[in-house]
Image 1 (cartoon, helix red, strand yellow):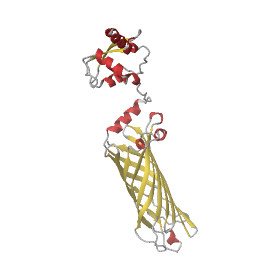
Image 2 (tube, rainbow, N blue to C red):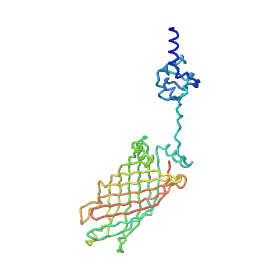
Image 3 (cartoon, rainbow, N blue to C red):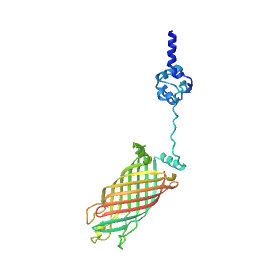
Image 4 (cartoon, rainbow, N blue to C red):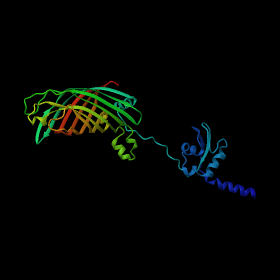
Length: 339
């Protein structure tokens, strides 16, 4: 009688797993893991079944060579899967957006570089507008030659440094409505920026990350430049036409981004700078003020042939000092990347 009751209980205990239509088979362990993980990831059983203690005990009874905490690579595990149990679907890898061969090659090349060095040439056209005591004076300051170098250094995955230096020769010019031609001293400048390469990844919103793109890179740093203006404020007082050189140090914040229109790289930078310190080679005879204000820059570059790239620059100053000064400059050029 006791034997009958025991047998009946045993049959009831495993009836769920031994019903007709039960799927049976051996699964090979691909790597050392626990029994639960093996059943979930390798056999693709649902969590509810994997967490069922009676089911786990049966698996251990059918496979005395394994334990609850350990199944070894290469072992075969016999499993009986109830008929009504649906296996989990295999994980599908996210499909990557197809990219052209040139796009993949360009991005792969960019990742390998730790240091970059390039040289550039440009020609630019500038208009200086000064206003003092209700009188406006316009001058053109065109540069036939601007030469410079730019460098970059990837500090780590999060940060990079970039910098540049340039000088420009300027054509002799005159104040509009004046016949007196004056030589303009050379203009030069330096930049140094810290770039935040992983900024986009720190944003929680997926839609914002998608909109900005993985190559969106903010940066901060400093600009230094020297430019010249006419002594417009003094001319109104009857002084001869001369120039004054102004050296300005700026704090700069900007962003850069790589676009791939039609699979062709297009690099963009945009920044705004606020003057921190200004010094002229001589004070105005009319005012002790120095120029202070903002500078805005928009820059584009796109490869045209091997290491050569075409560039475009737009620069705008809004300054206040001895006069109200507005400077608009745009230029076109070529750059060559050494590495």
